[in-house]
Image (cartoon, rainbow, N blue to C red; front, side, top):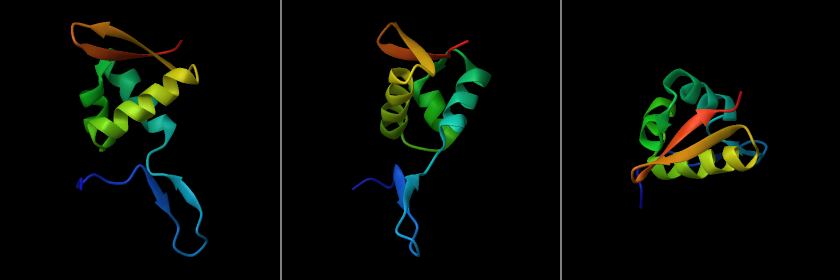
Length: 80
């Protein structure tokens, strides 16, 4: 099992499930580091590369960021 912080967290009182990290945190790291690798984004947000990759793909599908291949790695850009 991973030592990573969970992708989602649940409020113990209400049972409400929310994302551990906001979309804005990911987008802000990308804006400040563009182009940013998945590992750079993960480090900037404070999550694992696996969690960062899943969130980044979700943000890309929503049209909030863009990516392209650079060698064997994806790099991420803000959508202007």
